[in-house]
Image (cartoon, rainbow, N blue to C red; front, side, top):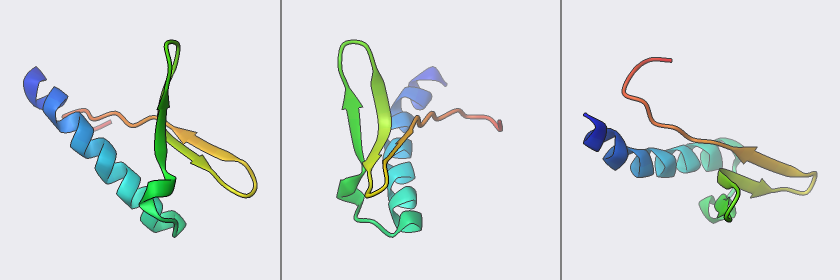
Length: 63
């Protein structure tokens, strides 16, 4: 099952970005990921009033 979780995590992250873009009524390409040697941010949006950042995690169970 761990292999499935690893496989499903990227499509789940892409789906989350599409849903967020739809809800915020912004183009999907405005939602980017950011990473460097110390940090990884799955959802990074720069808006007129500030920034939106978020983490996306796939788990094969209810939270």
